[in-house]
Length: 282
Image (tube, rainbow, N blue to C red; front, side):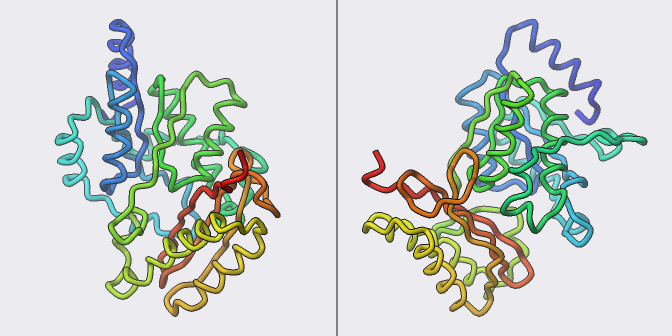
């Protein structure tokens, strides 16, 4: 389906059968991480709908909107293999008609971390996700833990606006060497791909430090910074340890925290994260 009208017709038919509907929003360039989200959706709902929309409002002026991968035929083959029930494939003009000027801003959360370096990004994310929720009216929506800040922002929006949709966060899917699956990984050269494993190495080192009793986040972040500085192809944009629900910074890990990373490998920006669980935090 390419139009909102057609999707709403389908939704009315599903409503007659009281079918639960899980939405998996994507920007296409599907990989095993997306497949994991689809399979999670299948476990929790009778009907699975995937959207593919490269959302222009979440890209900055110097970002990769134009070159973002759009392998539609391959995506369709994956969706068919996974027996997805419906696909929503709108155009930009369908989602943002002439005169569009209404946006959703999740205030403080959207200004932190990635929001510091990608102004307007989360405004675009929150807006398109709310639009999809209103159009599709899913009973549940599935997102990936790799985009931890996005997940927290969407959950905050759902709570604040009293939306009747359950947010499911599915674990990050990784390559054998630990690199989190991402559509942007295909931008990496062979040498950059090898260098990109530094993100996972940082996460593992941080987890090991915590399990060995380290609680000072400054010490953990210092180790992360040092590890990345020793990889010539890597440039750290930020590393922060935050509280899981509101992403406020933590000085001491007397509770569970999340280590958030954003690292440039060559010209490609990658993000990753890990939950740090002190063994004595209860």
